[in-house]
Structure formats: C-alpha cells, structure tokens
Length: 200
Image (tube, rainbow, N blue to C red; front, side):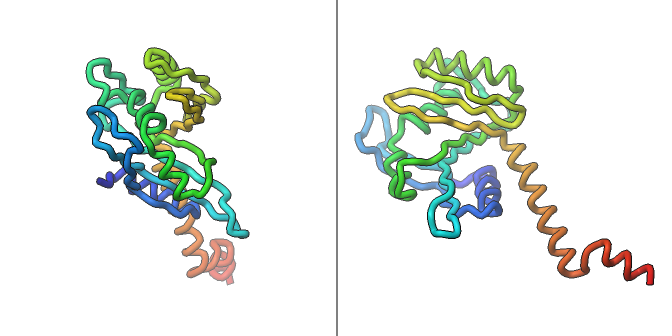
C-alpha cells in the first residue's frame, strides 16, 4: 500500500527527470520459515540519458517514523527495529532479482529515506546495532543531510545512502518554487523587464 512519504519521494524523482515504478511486488526464490513468500520494493527510479542509455538507477526504500529519530532500535521486536528492517529490505529479500529485471543491469544505487537524525547519535547507534546483528560495515560519509555506509551481510555487499525525508521535502519545495518563477517569467516577463516597462 502506498504511503504519503512514498508519493512525495516519487514526485521528487519525477521532477528531477527520473522514470519511476512504485510498490513493485516480487516472489521469493525460496520460501523461508515464517515468511510470506513474497515482498515489495517501495520505489525504483531510473534516469535515461539523451543516447537512450541509463545514467542512474536507484532502489529506494522509504521508512519514516513520525515519533522517533533514525535509527529506532528495538531488541524485543525486530519488526520495529529500523536497522534490522534495513538489513531485511536490502540484504535478506529476493528483491535483487526483480530489480535486475527492471533495470536490465546488475548496477544500481541503494537509498533509504528515513526520519530525521542527529548525525552523531545516528552514526553511533547505527554502527553499534549493525555490529550486534553481525553485519560488517564501514561508514563512508556522514553529513548533516545524509549518511553513506557500506554493508556486508548475508553474502551481499552494498553501499546504502540514508537521507532524511525532511531533506527530500525541502528540495521538493525548492524545485516547485523554481518552476513557479520560470512560469511567471514566461507569462509576465522577467522582473527586470517589468521594472523597465514601469519606468517608461
């Protein structure tokens, strides 16, 4: 089922020129004990260049909490543990086979859209919890608006970019404002031109 946050992230990528597919269902290659035998990818986005070749391809998972900062840790219930869910979505599902079908390639970026985070706390909690769950990892970048981490888990290695949803909203607002300015300039002319006309 689509969420508001997924719709916003899809809109963000569309306005940046990406083609998107949302809520892509896939079947498990092998049914696991307690599993449903199927899964869902939140969003796939692809940017096509002028020559018709893929310039960028992204697998995006959206997990935003309204009540807690990323990463929320729960040792009692893994379903609420955001680090466990990150590993499950990117490393423990059979989503990769479905992604290859769509992108016709084995190369793509992996991105998690999360709740806001305090960089220092998020860095520490993420590292500690990944270690507890048996995932080898290396923090590559830690900035106010994103964390990039390379994770090795379940015989897979991926580089995950973690970005807060609020940053996506902020950039989306800037895109809309820029588009509005362009439309106003096309209809009424540039502010400089209007000023010159009013001075005559």
